[in-house]
Length: 149
Image (cartoon, rainbow, N blue to C red; front, side):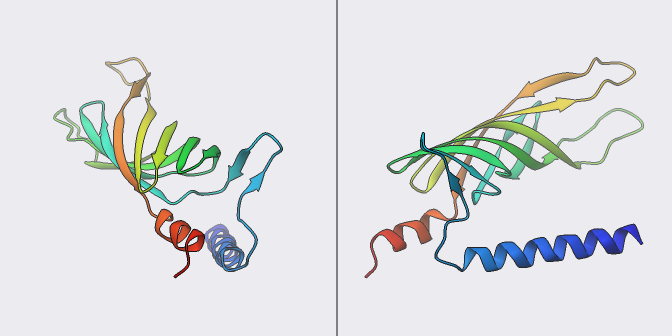
């Protein structure tokens, strides 16, 4: 029952955001200082952290735009890739949530994420800093809207 409720909520959220994106209004709310709050930003990033790799999309964020540059502080829903050589083994791919800073200029993005590894029997829990490169997928539509042919 809970799964059906969660599935219906996800569908309604997807349906609402899809309709919202097709209107003339922006999906971001801008404050007086030029800082914006967004539910998503359309940036995909791949990078390295803690001896493994990760892939993510920027999630809910606070951002500021200056010309073609965008500065973003966001939650990072991610997939982390790391081979575990101990026994018993963890899965090679694990979903995780990080936080981090992303800078994008036109189509390209650079990201500095922070991911937390929980305490285990042999290791204390601690934060790990990574680095990643990515693409701003919605920049193509943004540039077409600015300069229609």
